[in-house]
Image 1: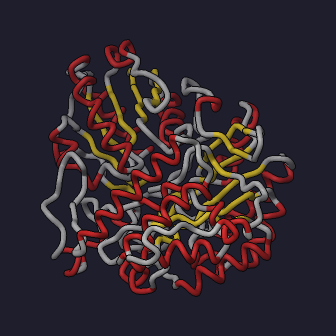
Image 2: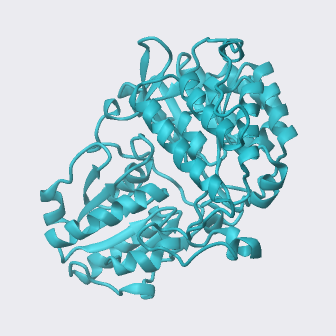
Length: 462
């Protein structure tokens, strides 16, 4: 059977979500082609010959991009069975079926794809099998899988993806892997929660090590662990990085960890540092305790400040991310967030796009369980894949639009993070009528050490 696995966008990473099922399906005897539309064109020959075409949907942006290309794929090969799989597939199942999707798979999707291939092969008919909700494969599977080492052959090389910027002209190739999926926690705005509901699943240690090994052989000098929270299984995670450090002493890596887990597992921070962790990404989201409670984040502003202190003491950089514009932020609150970033000496640790992140409320979001959220959202918009909302203070929505433009303009002009913060600060000050757009005093920025802060050339966001 000919299978085409399609990725559309995965934050500048070589897609694990394509490489992993490719290994399963090739072991089954399938002829698997892979295409990553983020860095290459659609291979028309692979579309024409495919019996099964499966789109990986790990995030909101990837899903919207996939929706744009599905029509072209179906026009080229109307007889192929069309599957959508990944985190964003189940919640958008109705819309994806309108686009022609015949099978929807979420959660632990490798076994589902394998079952689908076997079902299609047994029918001996291209595109065969039930449509809609009648598929025999579970739409969401949380089974404990024995993973295979991802097969990355056929994907563009690591040079086509995001690099690690170490300062000056030091750019390093970056690999990407996952040591676990799902999450123990129930943050209301998180897209993982409606699928995993507090469950997480590990990728076996030998599989992770083998995957990193093959990427190092392909030129990776740094690895991004894409786990929703690297310390959901702290013993599993620590054992992996210790093994990696013994084998590749110069290899560095980054991870994502909740503030709550940084505080709970603070003794792990020196271990991460000593095994090559350059930075921790943490979804802080807000510095307003009321907003943090609504999002059910599990930490407070004081906890965030303590986590910054702990990471600094352990000499592991903390790179916070934010959902800066929510229905509950005020103009004064936005300025307070900027001031907190400044006070905590995090200006160089915050990717500028974080100043302009607006809350998305997708299908199935746990935020919709709150009456105050249901009261402010409009009807679901299929093409945007969100429930739209408008802030009660139109000036906040205006500030968001201005900040987004300022960030984009600063990036277009290749301004550094301090320069872009200056732009954003002026807008925030003007929005609250304090200083009429007065900028930050350069001395206030210059007091922050200018040592190079490593960062990925493709910024992280949900």
